[in-house]
Image (cartoon, rainbow, N blue to C red; front, side, top):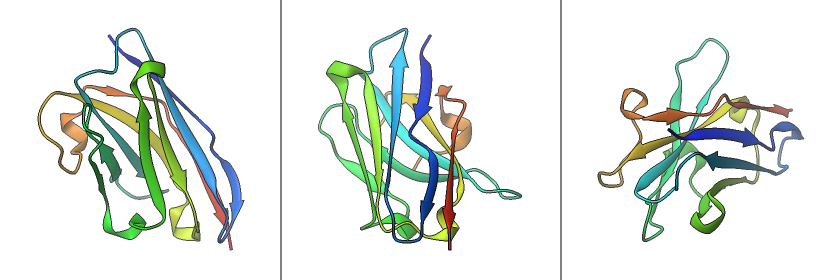
Length: 125
């Protein structure tokens, strides 16, 4: 069993930055593809970014490319999402999720094995 806990959410202004963290406990991070999803009010949960477990390859949803950076430190069982140049449309609850094995591709909600409870990011205009 893996427990995921997000932190780092809060209020930012348009153009500002936030750094989210996702700490895992209960089992090693190895062999898990790690993902960030987000869910805005009244909308479905959507994929944001993913990172492979071994070679550090990354994948991003188009709207965050060039602004967000996903990274991980397996030794610390921690994943990060650096969010720069934030926009009001980035406002959402951000979730980290883990999928065991498989290749790197855009995360699918139903395929995740573990989820965190989320952290709220609010971007003011």
